[in-house]
Image (cartoon, rainbow, N blue to C red):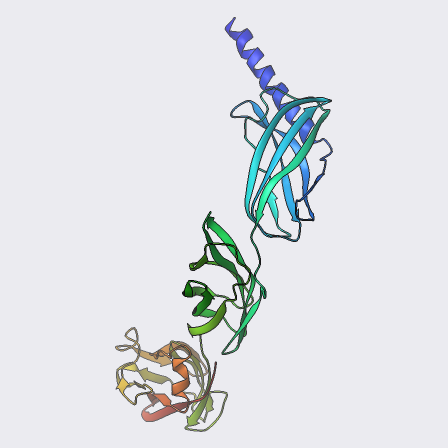
Length: 368
C-alpha cells in the first residue's frame, strides 16, 4: 500500500509538472483595456502558471501603461474564463504607474484552485483610477557649474485624501559626477510659501534620480502650483591642471638630465613618480632626507611607508612609487588654489656623489 501511495504521489506531481509545461507553451494572449481618461493599458504575455508550493494556479504576465497619464492608482478587475464559463475573478491595484512603464502582473497565488483547460481566456476591466496630475510646466532646468540639472515629470502624488506631495525625477546633465548636490525648492500656495530641500549623493553624469518632497505638499491636486528650484550647493571632483616650473618648465611633468629621467603623476591625493637611472652606477634614494612641500609652504616627510627606506636603483633600471600625500580639495573650494605651488625635494646619491633635485609644481588652472 505504501508503495502504491508513493507511486501515485509521484505520478500526480509529474502530471502537474507536464501541465505546467503545457500552459507555458501556450500562445500568450494580449488584452487591451481602455482607460477612463484616454489611452489604454496593454496586458500581454498572459499565461497560467502553477504555484507548486500551494498546488494552485495563478496568471502571470505584464501590463504596459499606454495612456498619457502617470497614475497614482489604477484598479482593475481580472476575469478568467474556461471556455464560456467564468471560473474566477480578482481585483488588483497598481500604484505610481508611470506613462510608458511596464509592470509585472501580480495576481493572488491561489487565484485558481483547480486546473483550467487549454481553452482558458481572460477579460480585464478598468475599474477606476487616480492620475497623478503633472504640473505646467512639468520640466525645470537648473544651471550649475559645468552644465545643468533637469527636473522633469513634475507632478503631485497623493499621500492621503488631503495631502498631495511634489515628486518627479532629475537628470544630471553636467560634465561631471557629483559627490553631493543640494537644491532648494519653493512653491507659493494659498496657505503661504512652502520650502523644501533636495539632496542627492554620488550623482553620476547622465544618470537619473527619482525624488519626492513631502515638505512641498498641498491639500488638493492643484496643477497651478508652480515650484521654483534653485541650486544651493554641491561638491564635485575638481579637474586640476598642473605644471612643472622647476628645474625646468613643462606641462608634461617630466624632467631629464644625464643622470635620471623622472616622470611625475599628480592626483587628488598626492604625488608619485617613475624614476629611471640613466647612468652606469647605482643611484640611491634615502627617503629619510627627502621632503614634500604642501601648497601652504610647509615641508613634511615623505609617505610613512618610505620614511625609513633606502632604495637603490641599478644602472638602466627604474622605480615606480607614491611619494607624497597631498590632498587637493573638491570644487568649489579648489578654485581658490589656482596659482598655488607645491613640490618635492629629492636628494640622490649617484655613485659616490650627491645631487639634490628640487621639483616645484604649480596649479595652473582648476576646471569646475
